[in-house]
Length: 184
Image (cartoon, helix red, strand yellow):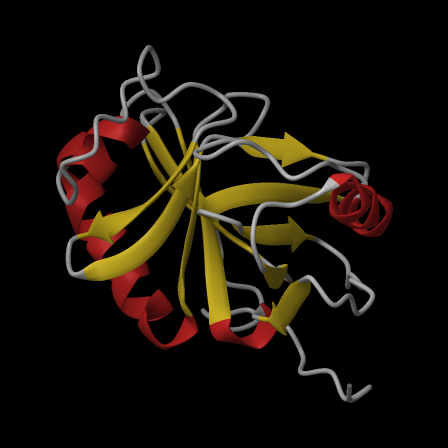
């Protein structure tokens, strides 16, 4: 395994200001964001769970759920597939039962909050993002507009985090700005 690490940099350029639409919608780029995709080979056994927890500080979450460790959020994005998100670099030691890919330089992350954040995202997806359905600690892989995205509600339940491909980050940001325009 190479020790070479790609850099996680802002997708919108250094110092891109957050955007607000009254008090109803706020959008901010989370930067830097470090992301590891972890794929498990078969259902994790007790040793795999211990390895996972030692590396990330959280056990693998159930499907559609987010687990919070001391330094990372772990998103369950498919059967035996997780994405770990952190503000600092992470290390997942090699294991015969896991494959790990560093997505840090390949993804952009945006935080949307405010009373109308779910309304804005609902303009581009068929997923019910109402807080009574899509509760804090929920995650879904979906499309928003024409963008593939991982959407989750952080554990504190305040708004949404959206992970998109870096090459579409600017277009996604522009889409959110247009979708929010009616609110101010």
